Amino acid sequence: MPGCALGSEPPRLQTLQCPDPPKWAFLHFPLKAQVLAGDEQMVEPGAVSARARKMSSPGVNGDPKPPCLPRNGLVKLPGQPNGLGAASITKGTPAAKNRPCQPPPPTLPPPSLAGPPPRAALAGGLCPQAGLPLGGPALAPVSGPPAERPPLATDEKILNGLFWYFSACEKCVLAQVCKAWRRVLYQPKFWAGLTPVLHAKELYTVLPGGEKEFVNLQGFAARGFEGFCLVGVSDLDICEFIDNYALSKKGVKAMSLKRSTITDAGLEVMLEQMQGVVRLELSGCNDFTEAGLWSSLSARITSLSVSDCINVADDAIAAISQLLPNLAELSLQAYHVTDTALAYFTARQGHSTHTLRLLSCWEITNHGVVNVVHSLPNLTALSLSGCSKVTDDGVELVAENLRKLRSLDLSWCPRITDMALEYVACDLHRLEELVLDRCVRITDTGLSYLSTMSSLRSLYLRWCCQVQDFGLKHLLAMRSLRLLSLAGCPLLTATGLSGLVQLQDLEELELTNCPGATPELFKYFSQHLPRCLVVE
Image (tube, rainbow, N blue to C red):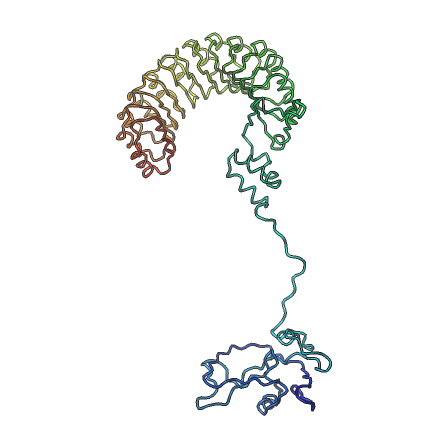
């Protein structure tokens, strides 16, 4: 097949006809050449020279060879050889005569019919017969627009993982940034276990005419809160809350009323309308009476806390024991409750009640403790904090009869001595938490008894004024300890406290108001107890 034929017209007006390029014309061979001498000359295709005709002549086997033309339509011709030759081919590269020629240039319209060929057509156009780009096969075009990703700031998948790292107060602020953030943050999973606190003055907005309008609680309903704490409310406020909160009927599981003026009628309406309430707390509510408890308490309540309510006495305990057969947790702070009230508990509470907290019940003595241990044998948590008339004998009754106890609080019991700790260590083998704050008669001997308790994880010795460095040495054998509080112990020194580094599994150490805790000691703890939180 002949090469690109040239007509008889002047060279600058002729048209190049490109045949089908041979297959080998699109193969690529690596070539490394180092020009040593001579300048290259650029000759237009029409200006035919003898060297160009020689290159377009048939090959060895009669196969035509297209002219060696670059993509810009010009032929590269080396200058005249000198003594060293025009070029030196590096070792391993094919000789110049074996180099494949460039593909033929694209077909260009005659200058008489069109203007100068566009630069793009010369540089990378298609060969009209081969249908392929001069530089090789073209890439297939991408169909359809590229997929768009939402910005990182509004990507819900990223935000769902990010917002777990913020506190409840920070989430409230972040929810005001934009609608996208609020939509993500208002999912109930981010607010589980939290209880909103609403004061009476925050429940209403004042209109321009001076009238009050109850606030919109839709935002609370969207977050799915199951518990509320209302402070300083009245019967009318509670009724408004029930009418305006969409989940009040069955969605609210816990209600807490603090320093409120709720009466017997208001308490009865609240528990009658809010059928989902199973946990109830009344603190500082002095307007309801024991009769209100008799008329309003429902058997569905499983947790009840009553504190600082002046009208609560023995008859209130009778109502609780009779009306709440499924009671699991009872917390009572009442100054007028006596030993007689603790005898009202029946066998029904004995099977269901596992937590009893008697806080600052000054009239309870060891006789009341006898009633408790016989009526509630399945207790796992017991608090006698502030029961100042309970002695070592009462603790002995607890240790002998309540073997399932895991938490025992004897704080602010000034009559407790080291003998009580001996009873605890001998019989309460499952005990994990022991609170002895303000037990001023506890000494180093009592701590020696506690050192044998292998299950104890939390020990509170705040303001135990007779504990010394020697007593701390007994605690070093308690490898199960995770929390130790020595706040306010005046006789402890830096030397005795430094020995606590042997408790390598300790997670929290409280040394607030401890004179022996010096800055050097805290630095020492940071080096030798790196995993322990030291509260200064």
